[in-house]
Length: 334
Image 1 (cartoon, rainbow, N blue to C red):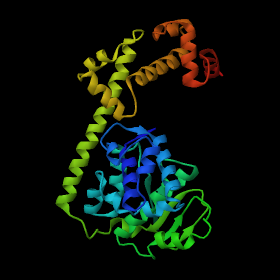
Image 2 (tube, helix red, strand yellow):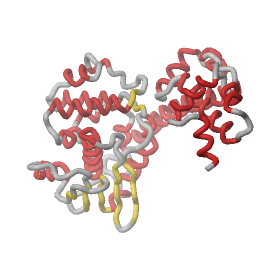
Image 3 (spheres, helix red, strand yellow):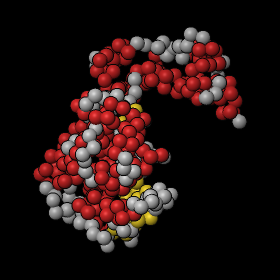
Image 4 (cartoon, helix red, strand yellow):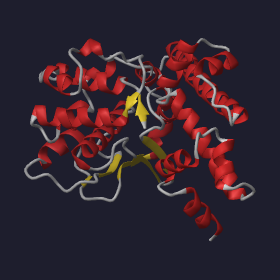
């Protein structure tokens, strides 16, 4: 999975704002200074964000740093969501916007609303799971959810239950209660917050119809740009399949979709992929289809996909699936 570098920039800026400094963490993750991270640049592997979260925890020496990061003023500086949240008409609108515009920075929203009377629940599904980074991201998301509820007017009576998927940290309960409230349940299978569902549609006092409309217009334009890149990737895949057994150069693909080669490379990179990855995805798709149909021999399938030899096809197919073409085909017939 790839994500927007916005996540890395926000975390680094949070370290600065909260008085820890970000230089050491940035350098460990391959950056010299904060401005080296272009929040509008190409998406980066999720593993890089995982690495930065782990480095931040080690650098601060604070196992509960997520309780600070989840409500830091640093969150107000970047992205399309801040103006939407600050001017939205209701908490329900905020959560719906988070879900709709998540694609601007990642593949899905980490907060899912479960509206099941008599209560409502925000179910937290962090981008990273497991280990210190997974706990950090989940705590960060829970803390952010609590902040949203308080912004919607929630008090201690409205927040009914807070589920945390980690054992209770020794000596830190008072700190967790100060940040999240006293309805804490550690050691749960899932992360989430149960709350008074009346909060969902209660008008937000800061709602500004003009500002909210303008923020949604900007977010929609950005979302359409992302979706346009996705459409380009799908058009390239379809064209590649139609061109097999010839494996065309990227310049031909760019001309087919009506952009320059440089633009195509940039658009695919922003989606966390590349032209060669699209070629291999298309080859795998066609290989599995042809093998499942059983009309052609394995050599003929290799020829249909433009491979120079059967052995080259075998190696590629094993890399894609973990199986040889013959064993994969046999398994499909089982």
